[in-house]
Image 1 (cartoon, rainbow over the protein chains, first blue to last red):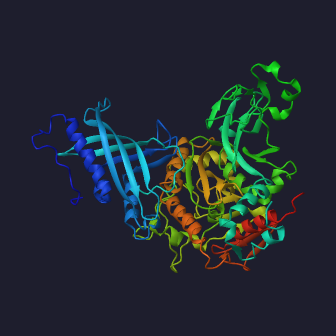
Image 2: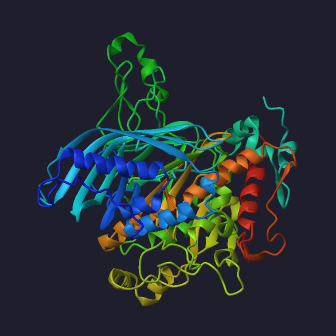
Amino acid sequence: MSSITRVALRPETPSESRLTLADLQQFVEHEAALLDERRFEEWMGLFADDGAYWVPAGPGQESPLNHVSLFYDDKPTLGIRVQRLRNPAIHSQIPHSRTVRLVANFKQETHDADPSLYRVTSKFVMLEDRPGSERRLFGGRYTHVLRRKGDSLEIVLKRVDLTDCDRSFPALTQPF
Amino acid sequence: MTRYTNEYLRGLVREDRVHRSIYTDPEIFELEMEKIFGRVWLYVGHDSQIPNPGDFHCTWLARQPVVMTRHLDGTVHVLFNRCGHRGARVLNQECGNARVFTCMYHGWSFRPNGELSGVPMRRDFPETVLVEPRSGMARLPRVESYRGFVFASLDPAVPPLLEYLGEARCGIDELVDRSPQGEIEFWAGCHRYEYNGNWKLQFENMADMYHPPACHASTVGPDGRQFSRRPGNRGASAPFFADNGEAIVAQTGVRGFANGHSSEASLFREEQAGGIWDDYRALMVRRYGEERTADILKNRRHSMTLFPSVDVLIAQTSVRVIRPIGVDRTEVRVYPVRLKGAPPEISIDIVRFVNLTHAAASFIQSDDLEAFERCQQGLASGGTDWVLVARGFGQELDEGNGVLFGDRSSEVGQRFQHYAWRDLMSAADVR
């Protein structure tokens, strides 16, 4: 995975000390930029081997196991998703979408279950434009559970709570 | 009044092709609402969605808001979701529980069986008006169910449900029998997707085994295998292509049934096995015996599509409901189901795998949605007026009881849908 660009933490951060909100914010903004720039392989590389990308289909959904989800991808499934996004025959992406995400209102929350984990929430708005289709607007809340890995972080869980998660959607091809 | 005669409507469907206007003409869509959706049995919901007295589940029959309820005596009813007073939609949440349903506008309230319960300042109404059944929440003229699948009809004279389902009822049996208790349960919500296209595009797709190699090409990995679309050690990523280079799925057969129903052969030849599936099988054998279990777990069918409202997804252990909204607008819901009595891990796996195949964000459905919208766009062109459903035409095998089998992804399923459409649309206006 040497091709993966890591977000180096601030050089003065000793590896034992707790990370600040600024560190976590920088990581989340970088992750959003990778998606905007269609650097899907690098985006996938941010996920821990036991990580998951989850977009619930119900407001306040408690579990991905007893209710359907728009996305609930473990790492191997993310691999299939990225491979498919790169497949020249992905008809729902010919032509492909362009997206831009604005992320704000970062808050660091304690993660009681495991002190080595960081939990950061943020609010986002995403525009999706695909030639020939109407502009789409999505918004909601990100929850990132991140784990220290060497001089960087890895994603244990990225949860996306869309404000309209329980409506019926036209095809969704872009991770949020 | 329509300018189309029955003879004209009949001519829009030929043996091996259909006229493009059946997908694009708003007037034909209005006639479909009346002559198809107004006359046959439509799927409403499953009775496990309303397990307790007072439970309600709101849905739509084509464009009409209805609610499936369980009355305080345990009986299941299907009501128009409309106040008997001034017509407001009474229930505004998809599901819930209440002893009475109260209208927000003037406070009229109704029992779960639709009867009028309370009227504020009642004495100012003539009592003769209030005792009319239509002053309650009116009931659908006909409601019948089969193994928990609740259907209703807007036509009081519709023949019995089982007659309408005919041989195709086996699709419901083949799903429900997979439960060691012989019962299924809706428990995990539903996927919802929509598209700017006619409802028949989704219907035809459900009987279409010819499209995957092209439409779903991006789901096949560099190793020539599709992603794993069902759990168990024999569900994992199967080879997509046969030795001769054809897609295996496109070599499978399709059946057409009377009244426009259709089914496709399963993508899988083997029983699921290994780990929890062995435990599941043992439970099945305890309930049904070895011989019957082997028969139930034979992968006969991918799905059974019941014209014009529901698709029983046997392989995916789910139920898909189609709701036409306009001539070029359709909403679809897909409910994964629990096989009651099966190990819980199996139900969880079903939910996870249906995410991959039927969510709006899934690997499969997103390409189908693209195809539906491209069809609607292409059909606006006047290049030719006809749409072909000719694959395997004339090569079908008559299996009796109105069932025709067509091998190698025959379009016999689509033809049967269109023949049913033709017969309903051109039927005399009064039965």
